Image 1: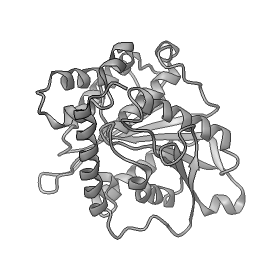
Image 2: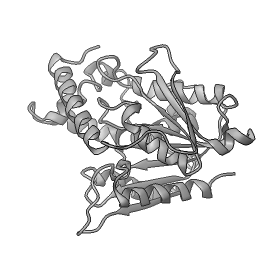
Image 3: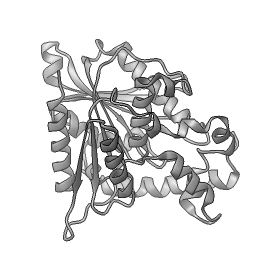
Length: 310
């Protein structure tokens, strides 16, 4: 690893700060939902727990009748340096209550990994889902990928790799025995090459640029810059995409630009923005299970997914 001690120290400090903020937001919520069974702390990769571990939440109706549930694979955000499945367990329980099995997983973070190691773990999860679909009543023919913030960027990067062999030459990910029906990016990052360029050009005292350098290390970026250029490799082979953002999302421009880019490429997608001047919606507003607008966005996403179930 080539991350500087300063970048790693900054990432550790910001991780603690963001975790405290998320824990305060979620105070009083229950990760267990009536009518949903959660299979917790399943190891999916060689790193073991806690980083290569996942939860599967399945609506009881599918367990009772032995049927397979349409499945959401959730890729959490966190600026490529923050987050675990713990923070997303409340959202996962809610989405499961809307009729979907949900795979909610942690992935390795700096200093355990550098780019593209987090995406490698995404690939491992998809292979795990394919290998264990029958055991956990997951419908391998109706799989949806949802990511927020950095997770939204990784969702599209992974899906672009497995639908475009030219892009996958830079990753060599196995194409799992799954049918992906749609992708949702919630307040997602995009155009990673430009974000990395801005990170590299930022002042030394820019806190966000510093923590991202813990993952996007000089060595990792020098190996193959084409891996950053996801959008160039996007094709109509991608499943339908839903882009969701808030009117006060600090990276809203990523969603707006992606919308225009996909439109120009003829890639099937929808764009939705939430919030009003009197009720602005911030970054990843729809992961706040106490926010009525966020809950409405979740319901709208569930409707979008249902429209694409085969």
